[in-house]
Image (cartoon, rainbow, N blue to C red; front, side, top):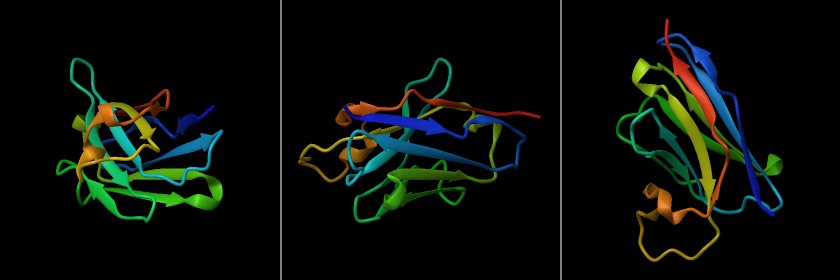
Length: 126
């Protein structure tokens, strides 16, 4: 049984940094992994993605501030968040899927992922 566990959320001041981790158990994380976030009253939105080969993609709203990386030896994917803004406040989720995809931008769509973590809250406030 595959489980994803996020960690690293918390309260951070505007302009600060935070590093989230997503660790998999039950299966080797040799697949693409996405980060999404959901703020109160809003839909879940794509944040970043890293392919099994290490290629990365980020949403325009976080480009230049957030970095996604992976450590396959630890079965873990990270999201380094810098220059945080109050608008970044949300529950952050990691997601993975091992299925075959038929279009190149599938990673931006939450419905394309079968496995999700429980989420970790990030609050940006002074």
